[in-house]
Length: 108
Image 1 (cartoon, rainbow, N blue to C red):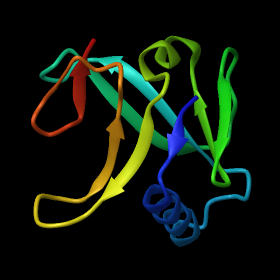
Image 2 (cartoon, helix red, strand yellow; image 1 turned 30 degrees about the horizontal axis):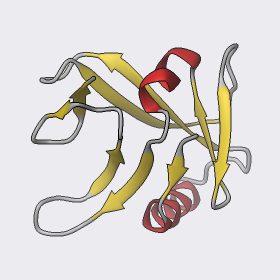
Image 3 (tube, rainbow, N blue to C red; image 1 turned 180 degrees about the vertical axis):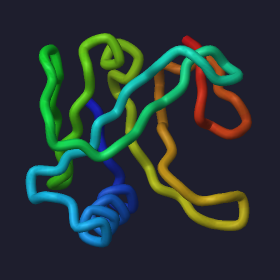
Image 4 (cartoon, rainbow, N blue to C red; image 1 turned 90 degrees about the horizontal axis):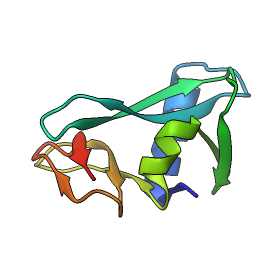
């Protein structure tokens, strides 16, 4: 399962409203090769399901992930942070053995 923190939920809902996205909008989370640690996170709004997608819902937010990416993301929490060191969505991924300084890539 992939979960969403309260801060991430609130910020995602704000973005969906601000961008006038359709009511069936969900967050698509994925993993692709690249980044300084070998694998990079992908995060985007979507409303089109694809073959093999797995769906989760937490705190009223629907999260969709492709089957391959799910293997790297099991147990991950999507968080939103702000402050002096930057702000944005971050992944608390228990499967990552190493992450880069920016937090946007990881290795297992």
